[in-house]
Length: 485
Image 1 (cartoon, one colour):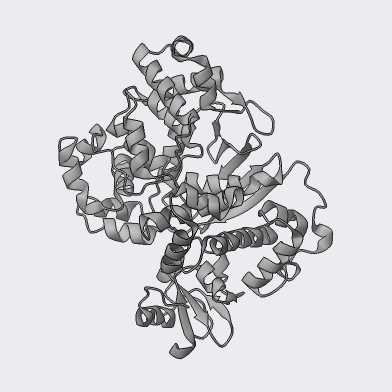
Image 2 (image 1 turned 30 degrees about the vertical axis):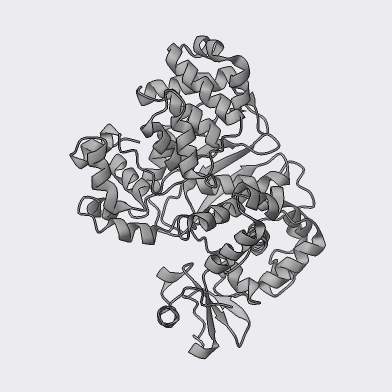
């Protein structure tokens, strides 16, 4: 096993040059030591016949290799968006979102409308490991980060990382890292907390630099809604919906370039930890691979200077797809200031108290369905048509319309535009932010058309064709240039 669809000679040359640009694009398995490394690992490069190359860390583990303790390949964040076929991309995204933890591999296959056997065959062929192995590696990497960064006991780490038992936790971490969990801990035992009844954890979330922090911060702060988010000059706090109601996440904006971002999480229970981390990574687009995106967009004469000015542009994600869609519909065809006012009114009138204390509220589509279109119109002081659109969207969301990165983008667009009052612009904006579709492009957008010097619609679509499959990132560059966030 190994070398799946990889150019082994090119991979070996990258390892000889310790080229960090290839970190995460593939992993080096060393037959003589049984470990796997990043291409940039400072250790001596083995002879070619002792090398095996893998597309994912999970593939290396499935082949019997354990993570190198020197270059720490388990710490690397690797973007998976649109790297493979649509089925595999969606499967990997859903696994990273914790679907296997909630419904198992059978439930994952059902959501993708394929058999378990077909899903397994496709995953192994394209990423080198099945769904269980991918999920196991995901949990092990989260556990390793918690061991490194927190004072949680190992039992709490196992629980927070989603393991069903201490025995399973020990077995998986030994398989992934070659040593028991206790050997990974550096902090002395007396420094650890014995209990986290009201957990508040400070974590460093890694990402692949560069990252255009100023543009990302401006975009997120410009759309912050009261009682859902709170903004200061140096931090951004927002409610992250979880199965228990919600967690509070505070991002500390970096003052200097780095490869991690500080996040403080206040949780009701440790079971909220993985969903909260996943939501924050999606919100900040930390799983992107900026090297690939920037290289592709730099070939365009309009985008090239924008990429040079802001390398590592991100597309902000949606922590809660339903909330984002409702806010987007409310913001159609009005100014940003007016949109924030009516969005805050929506939260105050129909939001449900959530999170560990404070005024925080989350949006539940069922509350709008129960209220009805007339009550929505009166409470929010909306035109009848917009109230009807908001109500119809809430009905779809309450009925199972999924707005998350694992959803089928084409079917989701079709269901959205079938709602009277939701057009192409709204569907594409939701696809950009809630579905995390890197190729989403609101071609009807007037600001985008103005930035390109063409008419909206088909002229924008033709002009944007060379940007595929990264049109969402190109759109963010142009919106930032026009100060439209």
